[in-house]
Picture 1 (tube, one colour):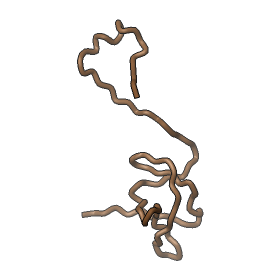
Picture 2 (cartoon, one colour; picture 1 turned 45 degrees about the vertical axis):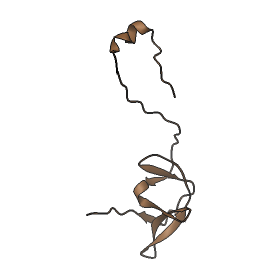
Picture 3 (cartoon, helix red, strand yellow; picture 1 turned 180 degrees about the horizontal axis):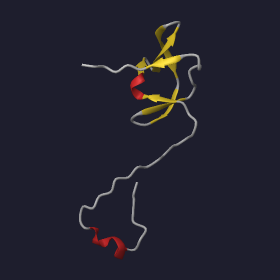
Picture 4 (cartoon, helix red, strand yellow; picture 1 turned 90 degrees about the vertical axis):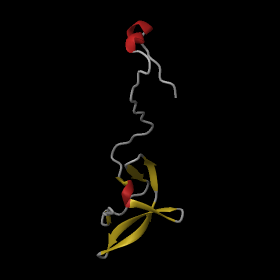
Length: 92
């Protein structure tokens, strides 16, 4: 990807050597999607799995995921609303 100035050089030439910018590029976005933290997901073979509460116990449940970033992943098929998923963080 190349990012270039749209203004004429007279407006930006004084920025100097090694001028830097931080850029956030959006390649996908959607509204009203169900996401979860990446820390709640783990691999089980080739599948993505989440612990879901069922009958008072946490059970590994295979799910399909879609788009992701470094913090969140999107569900392709949501868990039934009656099932709560759980996320734990290692302490130490």
